[in-house]
Image (cartoon, rainbow, N blue to C red; front, side, top):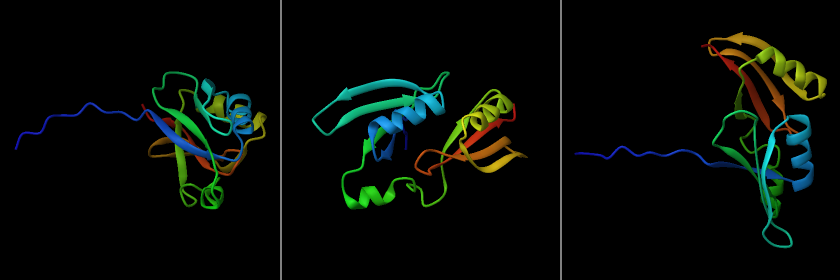
Length: 135
């Protein structure tokens, strides 16, 4: 069989949030992310996208939780596992920045086979790896 090779990529990753504005404030002011879009779709729904500084085609899309089931998953969308892997070109710079911003460091910096890694939590408790990959 001949299969055509597909050219695909992720565009957005949905992140359940309690409130659009508090999520924007955390990711923009505390993590230094860039606000890509904030469009009002209805009286209760917005299309809000942020991404880390640097080159990235994929963004986080904030989705305000509505149902009880959605609200119960805020901060634990991955069952306690790391949700995002944030690559950096300078681990020490970015780790120091997280510390100065009083970001909740869950696992301190260490060297792994993949590079320098630390785990931190966002404002809701979602876990994010800060990683400087081995070149």
